[in-house]
Each structure stands twice: as structure tokens, then as C-alpha cells.
Image (cartoon, rainbow, N blue to C red):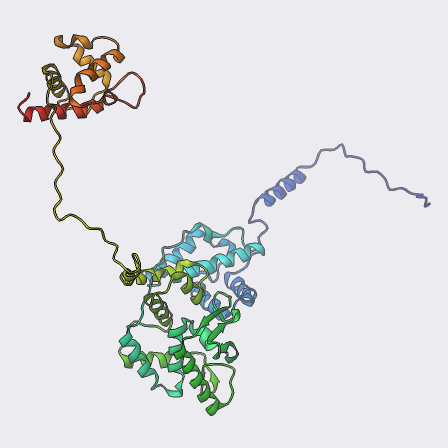
Length: 443
């Protein structure tokens, strides 16, 4: 047991009020705690963007695409502190890019990168809010669906076979029969090509969606790749990559592809459009959207839906599969169809009923309908219809009895019970009978 000889003195509350300077410092401290900009760590846009690209680029397949995206943004925001960039500045940037001829999809990708940058800066206290979130997204038209005709495919393949190195023809043929993207094909390795099983596996590390997918090969593609591999081995030895130029990996085939297009007389076409060709031909051959989505590697059916109209053009071919097997499912119809008979006029209509119909016709002149109580009230004012002066339920029964010879049911005449039955039914039926009787010379 330890003994404390000199215990610490207990602080005694001061009876003196705080000074004016102390109160002012406390107020300023509270104001700073409420002001989101007070604790900001200022950072220039270009410095924040460089650090963001370095950190964020680790999670991407290619950091070069992000760098190229920020090249256009530096022109607008370099020299500005991140927390001083406002929503109006970002809107001006978007408007200027659109006026310069940039497509909405391109500008929206710039907007997306700006939003990611500001979210990253908020976490590191370089900004207090994200000004991009207040800007609405532009309507984008991603409906490009350029695909080749059969004649254009023949011309393109003919010119591709003339290209040096022998690479272009098997590359285009594979793109047309797998729907793979250019980067996926150029990074494809032989170990993922099973010529015996007839499948190609595009691994997640090379696909845009980071998902592995397996695409079956038609026999013609198997033969093309088998011949290409034999040529590759004979000339340059064993190689890992499927598509090489003189034994070396290929980074771009843009020049050779454009030359083949020009010689084939094909305009407004890109290598990525070969993917559209695969999708279009798949639907024209009777494929369905679900399997097409799987083959293309789309994460949602939204992108695949653009090819749905192509299958509609071939729906007429399905007529041969409709109906009962082995016979025509068609009824025998009469050669002459008799027109419906006109409504029959009742044989005997009391004169009093005809007079009532004539008064009703005049009552509805220029009106669409009248409620039952209004009809009865107007009739009660006429001397010859004194019987309609009285309770509504009684007078409705009298009115129904007088119209019964014409085939009008009592349920079609307004009554005291139920709000759904109103006199406007009588307003449609009674004048019609009155006009019919007049045409027959009975009125």
C-alpha cells in the first residue's frame, strides 16, 4: 500500500468572469467548427489531380485513359484551389466542351472523373463539398450500330489478306465471330484458346467489365486459328500471344485496318463496329438477347437491347412454326354474311306513351342529360302529366310503366335508391325511341 504524502491540489473554480478576449476566442472557435471551409487544407487542382491519378490508377487496367481525361480538364482548372471551384465553373466547362464539338458521352465522362476527384479531395479535406453532384447528366445517344453487309465483309477480308505480316485477316475474322473487343483480342493468349473444345476464354484481367467469359467458336474460326498458329510457329516459333506481328506483341492495328477499309471502299467504320457486326448477325440468324448478352459480356441488358429490332425483321420466318402440326388451323367461313336486322318496332304502343316520348324529346332539346328528379319535376308542371306530382319513388314507377311497351326496363329509369342509376339513361333512350317512332309515321 502506497502512501501519498503530497496530494495534488483540487482546482478551485474561479469566481472571476472570463475576459472579453476569452469570450471572443471561444466564439471564433465555435464559428470555425461550424464553417466547413475553415478546416480545409488548400490544394491546387493540378497537384490534387496528379496525386489522384497516382492513387486511383492502381485500381484501373490502364492509367493512361485517366491521364488523357484530365488533359482537357487542366485547361479549365489549373491554378485554382480545389475548394474554390464552384458548380458554375464546372457548368461553364461542360458548355464550352459541347460548343467545341465534343459529344455528350465524352463530356459526361469528364464530369464523372471530376466527381471522383472531388469525392477523393473531400476525404483528404481539400474540399468541403462536391460541386459536380449538382449538375444533371446530359442525355446521351449511344445508339451507334454500324455493321457491314455480306458484300462489305467479303471486300474487307480480301483487302485484309493483302496486309503485311498476315495478322489482320485472322484478327478481323476472329472479331467477327466472337464479338470480342480489340484490347481483348490483342491480349489473348494461346493457353486460353481450346481448339479441340472450340472455345475461347477471355479472362477478367483483359475484359472491360472485369468478368471472365467463354465464347464458343464456329468450325470455320477453329480452322482459321489452327492455320494461323501453324504459320506463327513455323515463322517465329512458339508465342504466348495469339495475334502477333512478325513474332512481336501488337499495341495498335489502326493504320493497317484503316488502309484495308479504304481499299475496300468502306466508310464510317471502326474496329469496334466489328463487335456490332457479330451482334447483328447473331440476331439475324435467330439468336436471342439473353445469350447475346452473355457472349458480349454486358453486365446489364440495356446495351444488348439495341439489337432487338434486328430480330423483328426476321419474325416473319417463324410463321412456319405456328399452328397445329400437320394441318392448317383455319375455320370455314360463310361466303355471304347477312347484315344484322334492324330493331323491331313494337306492334302496339299506347298513344299516351307516344305523347310522353314527344314531350321528353322536347325536354332534352339542346341538353345532354337530365337527372331523374329534374325529368319528373318538369313533367309534373305539365297539366296532362299531373300523375308525376308526388314522391320520386312512386313517380319513377309510373314513368317506367308507361315506357315498358317500348322495351325500356325499369332499371333504365332513375329511381330513389342507389346513386349510380340516374335519369341520363332515360335521356338517351326515350328521345331515340321518339325519333324512331316519328320516322315510322307513328308520332
